Image (cartoon, rainbow, N blue to C red):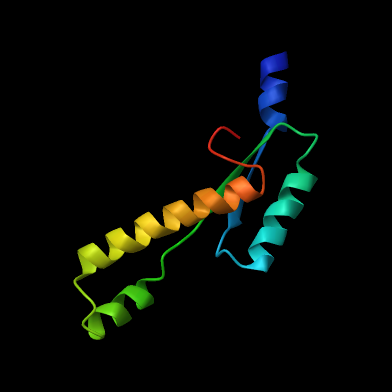
Length: 92
């Protein structure tokens, strides 16, 4: 096993679900703390609830495409701010 192979085998990737709640903030902080001294990657994931989109359509708030686009744009900005508050960003 070469040094590069060993290094790759020690790297870890963690997925943290983000819903912008205090619980998800704590989960992200715990993960950062746990991985602090190890080569690693954290993937922050926010999922848009399809039931919410369906309910918006039923309430005649718009069509699926524009609703999803608006939710995506808003969630992306909110996630970017959320991660900045935790001293994380795309470069981390």
